[in-house]
Length: 66
Image (cartoon, rainbow, N blue to C red; front, top):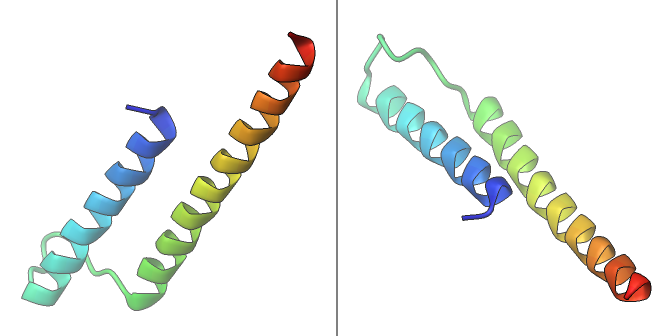
C-alpha cells in the first residue's frame, strides 16, 4: 500500500472513531468538534491532491530522463 494512502486512511479511521465516540457521549476519548473534522478532511484532501500532483510531475521528469 502506498505510504500516503496508508497515512490518509489511518487519519480517516481515527477521525471516524473519535466522531463515533463523541456522538455516543463517551467522555474518555475526548471531545471532537465539527471544526476539527472539517480541518482533518481538508488536510486529507490536500495531501491526496499534492501526492497526485507530485507523482505526475515525477513521472514526467522520469520520462524525460530516460
